[in-house]
Length: 377
Ligand SMILES: *Cc1c(COP(=O)(O)O)cnc(C)c1O
Image 1 (cartoon, rainbow, N blue to C red):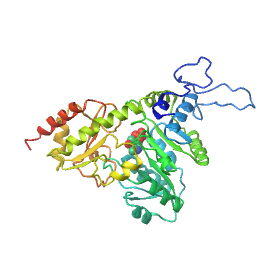
Image 2 (cartoon, rainbow, N blue to C red):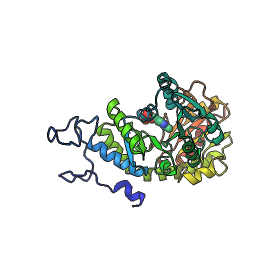
Image 3 (cartoon, rainbow, N blue to C red):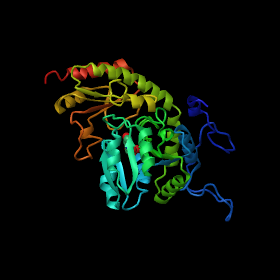
Image 4 (cartoon, helix red, strand yellow):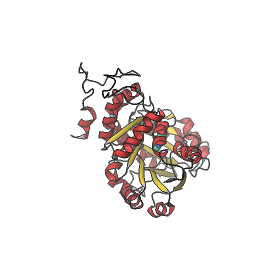
């Protein structure tokens, strides 16, 4: 089936006696048992719920994986997979990680005896050098956020396999519509479904996907044992959002390209980070491993004062963390999403745009007027 068809054509409620055309919200904590000794598909929503089952099946299909597990946030999903390691284990991860993931590694997992090393994962030899005898997991984000560095998933997975290390890819930035790391050799894919997968900035969720049955069993166990699975209403919202994933992302990509080309020529933009430009250092790898460059653009202005003025004068972009919603957002990562990384190496004047589905010319006009308002500087 073509992926456009896949987004909307699936059985919304297998076995439903009323044949509803959309997945019902099974808003129940408990299920009546058939008998004391029979096998019951569902008994308690923490361990399983039909709305969640349908969602997880659809998520696995979109990511070309065998198994998907939905959690109540991206951080809960990350905690389930990264926290499945044992005391004494070691993680190698990209140094420009999402701030919350950095906090999880440096302030939570470390207390459980799980250590980590951060490296530039665009450099295979740096990854290789960071491996220790106790390294169990390699964690990458590509494109990274907010500097949009590209890590080669295939080559990284070959290295990880050689060393017997699990490769986990945070695929939040592009979504499975643009990049499917499991097909490139990754062992596990993680998403904050709060972003593109749900797409409307109206819910929080996380997903862990994989092909390995043993690992899937373990993640299902954690979901139940730790009580972090996604609730039925959120599952339903996410199912609804997924249906327009392709429409939203393709539209966002079109608008993003136009805004990126405008900014590239802007005299007040010092450095621009967007993997869709053919002079981006990761362009070739990105072009091979993904179907598009996403909807994030980062740029610097030369000073934090300039960046703050620009942000203050903007109208159509909402000053907000996060990305992947229908509305365009603007942020200053050092002061916002990445503030939890204490010694961040990010440029302090870095502005990040998350492009929505608005008209590109309207967004460009807004950026233009906002950049003029700082001429007093
Ligand atoms: C937002 C985000 C997370 C965390 O997800 P939440 O849903 O906010 O808990 C993890 N990784 C990346 C890349 C993100 O953007």
